Image 1 (cartoon, helix red, strand yellow):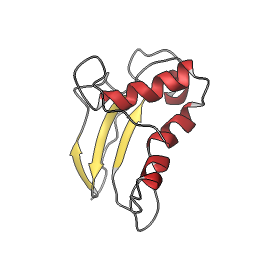
Image 2 (cartoon, one colour):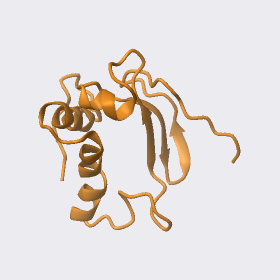
Image 3 (cartoon, one colour):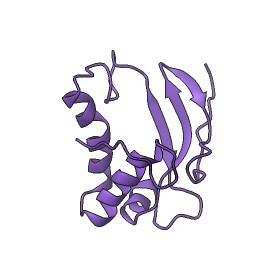
Length: 118
């Protein structure tokens, strides 16, 4: 599992886990997609949050849409994270409801999701 209880140097708590998984992927030799799984599905499983952590019918619709940050090195999100760049958050959905668009705490995402129909 992957987790943190420390700020990410910026004093912004949510960046802690993004920085941790980015460092794990860029310095620890773990594939970025595995680092994301360690921070989501595996953590939910270990913490017995049975309705969270995976995208599956019947689970909570809590989603973070992210992409490579504008100006970030690499070819796409996973390559960029492997090179040590924080992802850009484009949208957060909690309980199936859009709670926020672009994050003010991460670099801007190269592509931002768009709701076409509700």
